[in-house]
Image (cartoon, rainbow, N blue to C red; front, top):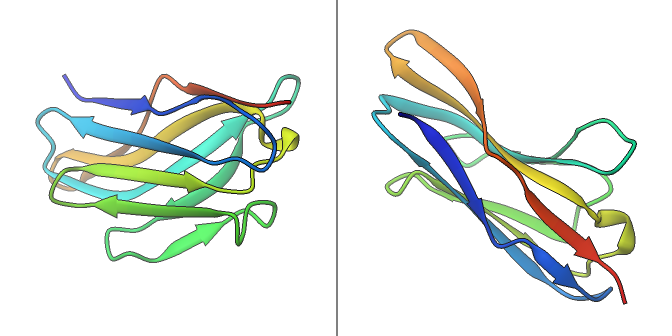
Length: 120
């Protein structure tokens, strides 16, 4: 069974830092893009950051220069280092990955989500 498991969420004060991690497990042939999305109460899910298998990255304007996405292809993991956190960053953060279980048939997978709360 293929799954994405996130860890690292929690409560942090404004200006603080958190590091989210996500591990893909199961019989995976290949992993393409991995990334993080978030959903705040009453809002649509939005892109935070993505990274390709080659290391190219893309960030939402709201998190540029504060968040850094990275991945370890050998361990099938993706991380999100979040610095200078703001109350507006409060949301459930979801790991996302394009996984290929059967060659030529990639599919999108989601983690269960991890809560990040930024509050004093």
